[in-house]
Amino acid sequence: VQLQASGGGLVQAGGSLRLSCAASARIFSGYTMGWFRQSPGKEREFVVGIRWNGGHTYYADSVKGRFTISRDNAKNTVYLQMNSLKPQDTAVYYCAAAYGVILSRVRSLQAYDNWGQGTLVTVSS
Image (cartoon, rainbow, N blue to C red; front, top):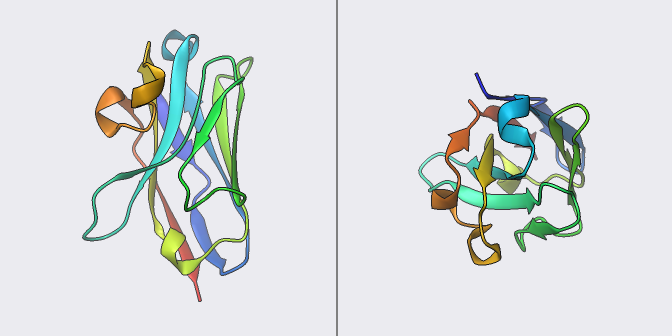
């Protein structure tokens, strides 16, 4: 297993969760890391991405100001801090990795060729 996501759970609206994605060293260095999510009956969508050096981050409009992505290269781990959660944030969250992705494709699901198993986040109203 090259990507291992964890940290999902059940939380009330307005609450917080932190997701983690542990990656093997081989695919972490130099990779852009992303979080995507998929709700029942919907397509998987981009949530947030971060460049390998952590210098640039990219957010979906729906999570700006509420979610924060960070990475610890020494631990080969990327984190997603989710605050002010809403019921519409309920989904399976997947971490993904992409090497050499250009800026215009950071939000593209097809740019990522390494995927974790997903972790379920449920936000109750």
